[in-house]
Image 1 (cartoon, one colour):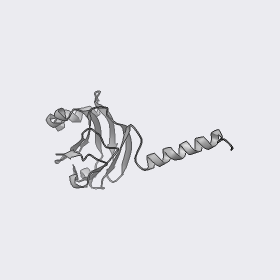
Image 2 (image 1 turned 45 degrees about the vertical axis):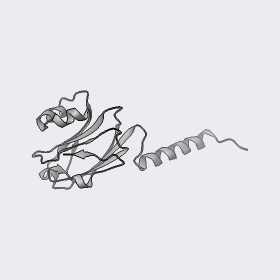
Image 3 (image 1 turned 90 degrees about the horizontal axis):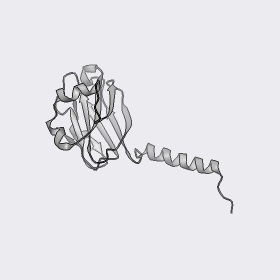
Length: 150
């Protein structure tokens, strides 16, 4: 029997990796997808901030506590990205080891809910849909557990 050559093994590994990432599954990472309309945030760009947080701290944070972290991130910030209304966003972030992952949308005039939290175990993927200046809670999807919006 012929042993596989290095090129065949490399192709097989590449195929497996593409299959995993296409399905939204990359071990150790969360795939976050954000959908918005052209009228989200009155058509103006806004920021999404992803942070590693303790659930109890998340509950006490205000918009004014979070907004400065876009320009002066602390160690809890995993990712800050500018979003243009109507342009879909899809990215991978490292799964927090023991903390929750929180998503904050810094709209010009936020309406509740403007943030959501994924408590441990953090899902493999999360889909967040935005409308106006808020998250559409009924349409958020994850691979379990469900996010907690407020």
